[in-house]
Length: 150
Image (tube, rainbow, N blue to C red):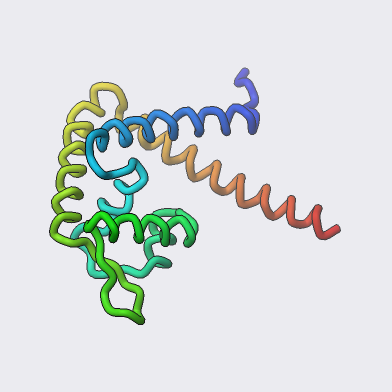
């Protein structure tokens, strides 16, 4: 008989995986002016038309305040620029595109090794678990909202 999963176990596994991925990215940008969290923005923005902070926040799952700080940091480093003064759209500079290309190469090297450790079936299961956990958390949030309003 299967052991029933607990929320604490789901949380711990999620944190562990996130922690390992975070350290991989952080190690990848060591000895560069980049921070680990810059990677997601550079990779997403590369090859796309200018994007607003809201579009980036929505696409990457970060809150708007964090995205605003990161965009300012990337602009200060010379990796991103704001297009115009009113529209608030950001794009990567040539240097930002070059860093995004470097990061893509790091990911390509990881992609070559990944199948040695994780199968396509494993990835599908992880995706299914992620979808199920997302639905669970939405439902839990709704339930918690009802309890607070009662």
